Length: 201
Image (cartoon, rainbow, N blue to C red; front, side):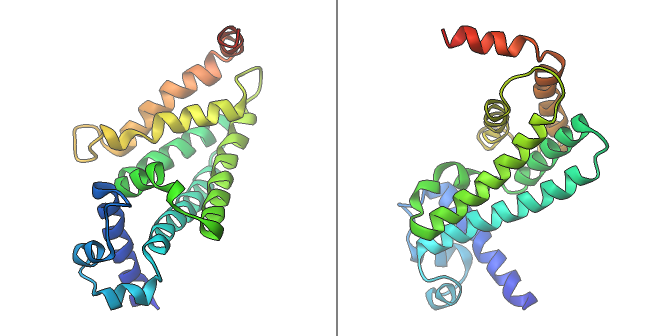
């Protein structure tokens, strides 16, 4: 079973890299076989279609990041620490899964039926975890759902400009993003509702 998992992980990593570079529609199963080192028959041992391969990438990624986030926040002592732990885990996880991050950002709508529904359930669960953490912040502040998507917007596009091997390591980037966000959401929470109200007319 362990060997099976390692081979599947290798296939999914190669497929994520290929989808991220070429796009889902421009990638064929033969392209994926070449990139992964698998034969076509070897790939079909694990998945029945290119869409199922895309599903496996997205579903596994959400499972892993959700489980890791839950573990990270479980040991944090207070509300702000839990938010910082969530942000640190999210950024450091995806800093080592940049291809998967791009696939999640661009290829979700390529899934259909039960596969699409399951990935959306996973995503809703993950967003719900962050929303709950934001809702636990005491005092008056922006709507937690609005804040959650704003924070994800800040974190999820790092693949377009961030290089994990560069001068800023992933953990330091996570701490910088946490401070940028939390200094506004927590320290300046009274200003946010007035700004939202003004923008809303």
